[in-house]
Length: 324
View 1 (cartoon, rainbow, N blue to C red):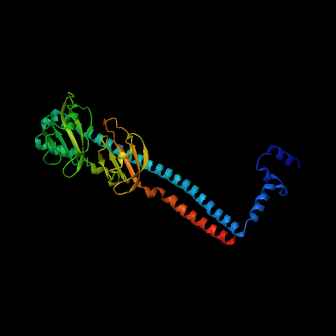
View 2 (cartoon, one colour):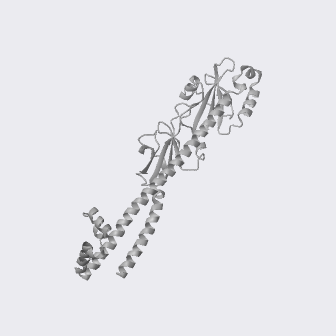
View 3 (cartoon, helix red, strand yellow):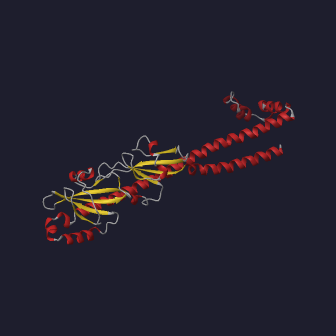
């Protein structure tokens, strides 16, 4: 009895008092029951039906929101990890190309005037082709004089004098490897890696090496639907899905995920962008990766759980309705 008295003092104003009191003193509960019994049978059935219809609806709504929110968070985390992996793959690929250009520019046949002078033009071509054979990523490697005249190239084709091109002028002034903006040729899009060839004895720039990298090399670099965009919003590699989506991001320098709808096709996508970390040796890279997936794939798990939950609640409500 002391325990009951203490409970009354501590919770005298609490509705829970009536729950803690003995059965005979639960006045409010009895009033509710007695009021419900005063209703007609039809009113009682209507009240129960309303309860059975409202509670499951509220439950489904709350659980649906929770499941969808969790699904979006999981999808965001997964896609951002995918974007980071793609970004690292691109960065690693570019670092490899940088190392290759450095190695080509340092070939004795190119940077040592004594070796160069000791060989005939035919021997120079044979030696150059043999030395550059391991570098399969490039469609052509050309060595130019500072005035743009061709000295050597791995692929026998007509090559225009690039003296007026901005990438060539940048290469003449650079101390290391440079990377051009995407350049559209007749049948493909390419990037030009360039590097100055400096005389091993004087350190003076005596030639420029240019390696042509087809942008399609990036397509199969990573097993995901992704695009690469440069600082001017030009596509290095483009998925048809994301061509119009890049404008949805206000800041290209942050990791971000968004839903986006193509106004022409009404196709809804879930897209993530991530900037590619700068490469010290390649200045002004400023690229980013954009990864996309269908928006339905994001909400599909929660939709399935919601369908199963709704079915279960409907069955339970039907059984209760029959019993009552």
